[in-house]
Length: 107
Image (cartoon, rainbow, N blue to C red):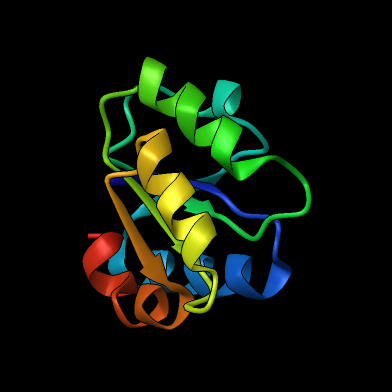
């Protein structure tokens, strides 16, 4: 399975890479919505990224891709979670749940 991830946090990138490798999934780290190929099965977006505007990127992805968009955020950032849902994220989950669900999300 091919998964795209808009993540600039090195800690999370390595965690995602390790889980994908263990599951035999292909993970593509992208810098923006335009870099995400059409044939991905899922798109993961870090709402706390400092390298890109995550809400704008979700809006672009929603217009151009059919794959579900799973965004993750600190559990205390309720407003950012709401904005991501309004932008078109399929699911917005706390960072801790994202880590717990990595095997499910990457397979």
